[in-house]
Length: 574
Image (tube, rainbow, N blue to C red):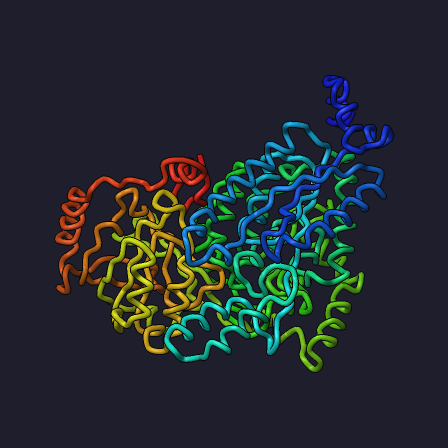
């Protein structure tokens, strides 16, 4: 007997309450599928999801089930930038996961369809479905179209910094703002939203070839319909995510992450998702798998093309085909088949031919190899992420080295510490920061301020021709997936926990050595010192630190900051 039917026997109020909601008598005895989404008017990535909800619901009904719609709308990181709203971003991931758990467990369902697009909604749904562990399929909301001249939203931060410096006119800035988001869907670059859509498929929780489709495409609606049908099949089989998601699944996802130069925020999200499955992933897992991995994708922000072209080039399956010698091809997926079997099916059912036709329609004369390079023509062969260690970051720090200028791969810089982002960006924009400086932004970790993105500061640096190749930004906060330039984040332990980053003083000398995975203090107040002298200074400075007092005394951020683990573990609440 299905769980929903057992529940009807236990709770006599259930049937009349559902009839009052609009269910028919026949619906009560069907397999019951929760269709959970972030639909709402919060941003373009969620505003269109009701269409996909209804397509999934239609698929559920055609397969003999009944789909019940539940919603937990997410926030937009882009709309939250530049003010304290961004502090709620990471915390919202865990709150959405909590609501999914509540929705699905308060009244158990036989299966589920989970639909989201963006930065926190997507990983939240993956965390939530792992907790709920009912047979289910993930549908992602796809990616928005690019604007005129392939304009995409991640360019707005750089244009804004140029406008603030007087390098472009107000009319130009207004044009860019009014044309950067011409449709619904996730932002059209490999930021966190696009990365996590890709991760959902790479984990094996989506139907093959359905991640990061253009949000306006008929193919996406067809995928939602098929996902609805499959959810009922899985419910009847009793095939839950925990039955097939293993460490091999996560290793496959991380290898795909390396090939696409995915967002550094994945180092927060994949460990948090793995934790919900009872698995442990940390920064070392990423660093190990990225070493020797081939980086293939020419999509923004590291590459040329907007993200909609990812699907036209063959999407996740094409990436997997190129790196298949590294993958666990026997990892099981939501189709009931292995990764290897799915790839063979796609080759035989014309998937790549359809993608090639779309590419010729959208970019005549171009080939998929210009967007997803063949394995032996990779941009690089050391992945895209490195995890650095040293006396500044005993538990680690994260850098996306594919977007770091080569002069910053090995450097000794002078520390310029700031206790909040607002002071740091003012110093960058007013040219108080000079070549050879290391901008330190601290007290921005999970326990400090909720771990907001340092997006505007990274854009101000990356868009400055002189500073972009001559300084670095170090923080216990995080970065947008759109960020470019010499940025090192997730420094752990964070300042609010008394981590060494809290003890850095003006003029201290900091060594960055990305090839050797080193981030450390090598001098005090401009003078190179012995390791012992530095250890003693850090100890003395830590003893002199005033106790950290959170500014959050109530609400979600108080709860989150009190219970969040280290960024290198995933920043989830324990």
